[in-house]
Length: 81
Image 1 (tube, rainbow, N blue to C red):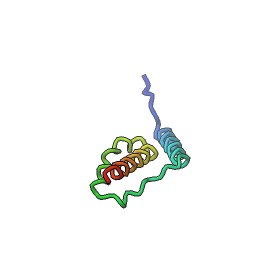
Image 2: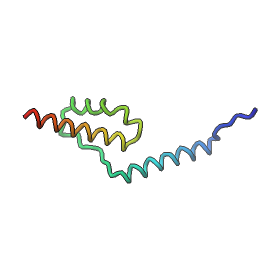
Image 3: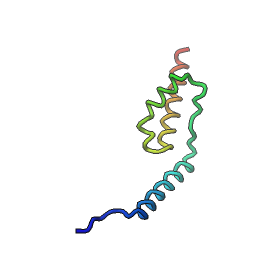
Image 4: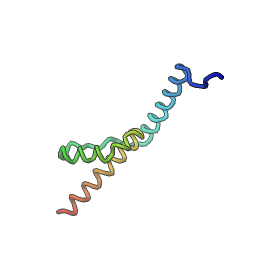
């Protein structure tokens, strides 16, 4: 029985097709990486950890998570005042 699998060339084509789809989705999403420079290193680290799983789903998912975490931090700090 012959093994059914991807040849190196078809694997590369599949990989670059997937990469192009993700890149196009990212470019069309309009989602930017949030600016974390005004946050403490501890807050930055917390956001990175909170979004670590979404990072594997691509930049749009990761940046959406990070933006949501920044928003929550702002809400918490506003309520604390």
